[in-house]
Image (cartoon, rainbow, N blue to C red; front, side):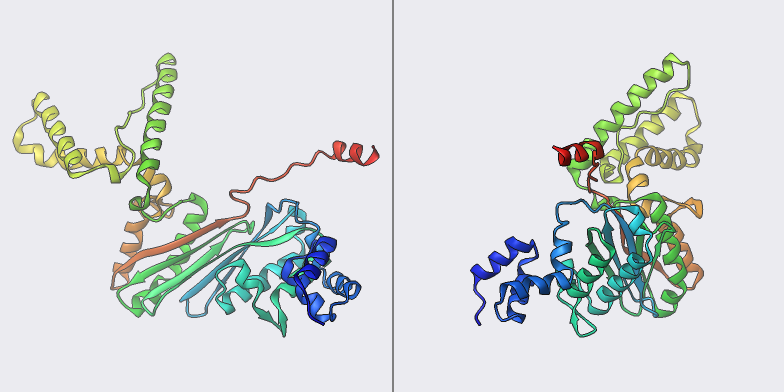
Length: 354
């Protein structure tokens, strides 16, 4: 029997199951409405779809890394409650989901659902498992990095399974890349804790930097008013917050200002070359606070705060007899950007009693 759009629409309205699942159910059941409804219920599709209005903002990050450290995949699988996220069944679902994404190179959640696992659609396996667990669960994001023989790819998932990071380090040779495998994991651990939002200051949007500059300057001025009232030392109010603002003209002017100050202080000109570089470096340090907070390469490395992350990786590459630099990273944190619904239990009970 031919399955029409009207039949699919009717079944969808009755079960709240996804359109493609309704079409498949009707096809499998030769257009029989009741059998198709039962087919969906048996596979948990209708049941899980009924939860569609709930917010899944808890969950876990799954990580899969290839044995040769050339590929890595992250997935974020969301649940409604942290209690379910600690369930062994949920943990197994996350593990199988990230393995499936890794093996099939699925780049989107939609593509992942269409892949095949053990002779059936992965969507069927996923929805059946969700039905058994008993609350809304969904794959929210998939991310992956890969590289050639000169690239080391590694990752880290924090112990709470809510934060996952993968890092790719590009090297001069396969030998150096092999040495950088543990370094890539250390950088991933750093990124887990320090929350960088981008790889380099070069990635910042100019409008974002401008808005941040104005906001930070006003915040420091406000804090300085309180410090003055408390008779505490005042904080330096920077003119800039990112290296992307420090043009050649800005740096030239800063150097000129430093020399003018040295002259006013009566410092002999023959020693300026020993003083200016340090003060110029301090100027740059004071005026790149955004980079050190949000750009991975410019952050102080947690394992050696005398170095930036970029400097630490370069030093590790040199120690291995080659060169190394981070080419990419991805950081996922469960629920970021989602607004979790807070239920009013008393109001819900009252509504049901009305």
